[in-house]
Image (cartoon, rainbow, N blue to C red):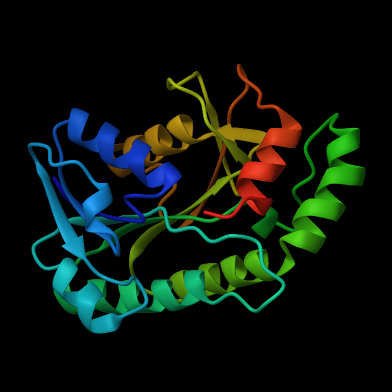
Amino acid sequence: MRIAVFGANGPTGRHLTGQALAAGHDVVAVTRRPGSLQERPGLTVAVADATDPAAVDTALDGTDAVLSALGARFSKETITTYSASATAITEAMTRHGIKRLLAVSSSIADPQWRPTGAHFFNHVLDPLVNRRLGRTLHADMRRMETVIRETGLDWTLVRPSGLFEHPVVTDYVTAETSADGVFTARADLAASMLRELDERQYVRTAMGVITTTAKPNIAKLIWNEGVKKK
């Protein structure tokens, strides 16, 4: 299958691109920074801003499915990356007749999500980090979800919890709407998306993804994901 990966040079996108190539897919890596991607068999680099409709339309020509791993940093300012890119991507997919879309969102998009037994997270980290520092980012994720839900595409909204780096894929868990857990390794997130691309268990719904056999350093996670400048 020929897959377009948005955010291919980002932290999750690199896992997604590498795993897709290893699985035998052809990958069109859509990025604004082509020099950061190493040339590999099966990989085509498409230079495009994901919010630019014309550039996205060109990048998607000849692809069979779209996987979006786009991300943004926390900011006090209004964030539009997720919703604007979703609009450009879904409109281009419709023009090209591409039906399958998997887009990374967050467990925070589920208003009922409260991990079991995670008292410190639910009462300290979540209100402080996600609901306050990440307020504008998660608001745009919700706008992205609305844009995608209103299309006629075969979409899956992929909702990880707190993202962290782990070198290998683990025995991750998926569930409809959101999964009961606090953290998700990026390797597991990528693996779950590629599995869902084949299995189609969560078409036109949300898929929660959590990692249960590995945990990150909390302070390091907050710094890397929400504070540190790129």
